[in-house]
Image (cartoon, rainbow, N blue to C red; front, top):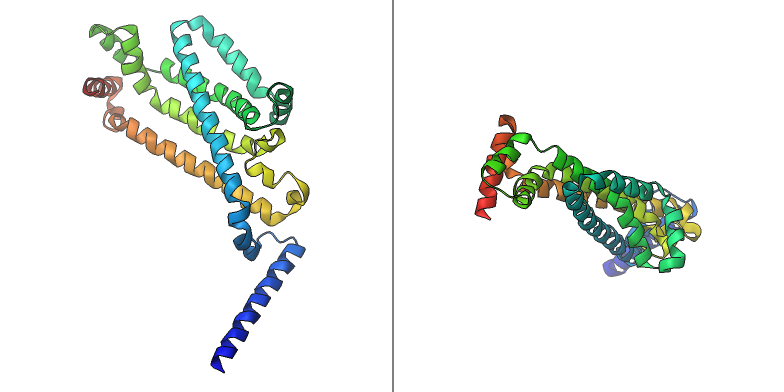
Amino acid sequence: MSVNLTLVGQSLAEKLAGDSSDQCIQDNGAFCFNWIAENFSDRYVTPTLEHLYLVGFSVILGFLLAMGMAVLSHRQRWLVPPFIGVTGVLYTIPSVAFFFLLLPITGRGVDTALIALTAYNLQIIYRNIVAGLNNVPVGPKDAGRGMGMTARQMLWKVEFPLAVPEIVAGLRIATVSTVAIATLADFAGGGGLGSLIITGSNITFKTNILVVTVLAVGMAVIFDILFLLAQRRLTRWQTAGESRGGSKRFGAAMARSRAA
């Protein structure tokens, strides 16, 4: 008898939960918990992984291109204005328009989305790298020349280490921006979280929009924390020398370069 009562209770609870979920969906509730629990693994995992790929790959590619441009323009200063101008023009193109402009050339798919997202990263990352190199104090550079360093050694062992905070700041801004823009990548067939909100009735289903928003914001926050941790690790010398000026930072950078 007790077993039957237990089964009846479980059946009634499941029915009430199902009715509650259906009613929440019919009312277009802002947070239908039962619906999320039933659909999360099947509906959201793959788009989230696609979004991570779009953001991660485009930021890495943008960083490599921007770094190459920064190294080249650091030696040939006349290249800075053209590089800033070209990347600035790319950055001002509306994202959806950019995707559609690329479609006749690269076709519909992930490659088109990655090209556009990478182009948007260049302006932010390049400007920050250039600013970081320009803000390196004169004292450390003079000391490096006094030690007989070549221009190449000066760049990689003195200037870039001291420019890390500005470079990481650019990466943080570019990554958060890319997380947002990548939600529109589905217009180019790139998938990602945007595929869950720009088609059919998904655009009006409040619970779905809330879940996508939370996933995107959470992804941006996690990326930002990871960059902060990376910056802290790469600039461990800065904490001790920050209050003592550029000479202390240079000394720490020299110690690191000799150890390497």
